[in-house]
Image (cartoon, rainbow, N blue to C red; front, side, top):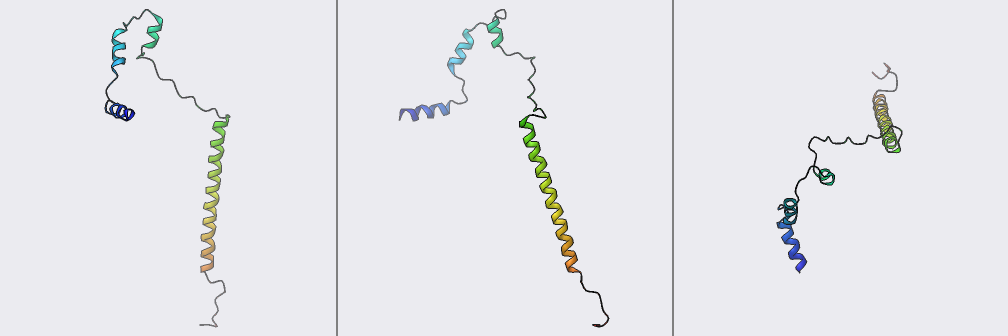
Length: 104
């Protein structure tokens, strides 16, 4: 039962920063000459690293490329089949026997 009370109080204080963190920030003096402290401070002018681009011959690049090409081939085949089906339906709608004046 105590754990549920702790969890509920934790949910309420979600937006409030922890007091221990604030105290540790205030106690630590900022000294730019010491290297360990300087490494911990955020550098404002530092650019973000670019994401590693996938190399063209790596498996992580080739497999999606092959899948994409296969899907394009399948869609082209389906499109061609639909066109052929339409042509076949048009051909079947037309009279397949020559006109005679005999029936008129």
